[in-house]
Image 1 (spheres, rainbow, N blue to C red):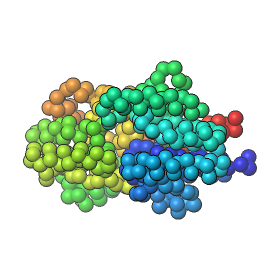
Image 2: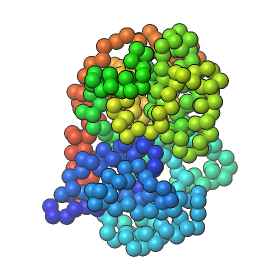
Image 3: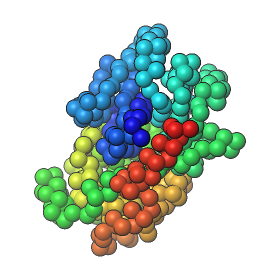
Image 4: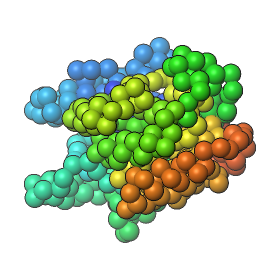
Length: 376
């Protein structure tokens, strides 16, 4: 096959989150003899995650001014983009966590992009659905239904939430480079030494500061753990993008509870795989998720993983995962976490590969499927 299929990917933000991790790992493992990606930056006034890497590889990033900054210019730039470039692309993949913006997919249809895919990455959203938002969602569902040729989802829950029961969707796993996350004792020692937490019980969390990730409840859980173990540390890795009040509320709560010296706000990290090694367990008490890739990464690192019970059971690849109800109080969470404090970390690489979440094996299957779709 001589043709290289050109795909336009929409969905990278400046935050290094689940969607960004999924897309960059997929991108890094493309067989570029057959398929290649360019990207749209929908917050064109700032750089997106991994922008330098993408450009260094010779791929293009097209900038569209954000809708919040200048709505008219935003839509006009989309129209100009598709008018000029639509003919160069075989497909567009619109990665999204909500139904508030279907412009890219609809214009791709208007300008005759052959394959138009919407990929659901969440099972709810952060915003309150008032009357106007409900109308907006109905309009966008209509636009989605007349625009998309294919529907993808990171989990069954994410697909049902966005598309409903009547639309047939395909599950596309969030793949990870498993080898990067294998438990590494030397890296554990290095990170713990750098953070001066060598003799601590280290609880980890990775996620942007948002309503979805439920940091307030997480901090309350840690407070209960700290009451029983003064050598406890909480590592919070994630950006304060979007509504930054969630970040400030978390900082204020930590100060109020007297935990300032035991909660580390580390911001976004490009070498997040190294920080898993430093942890003793991982907590994700989210209010909703699509399929949290951090849950897969943490298991690969051999960590005990405590998830809220609303998170899809598709995350439970190993017996390291325990689900706890958000109806349980923070003290109960703390008790369960402390009970499993002492365990031996083991190499989970083979189980991750067998489950289909490893990028080297999984991406080959994904590309075969994608190329067959593009050849239709």
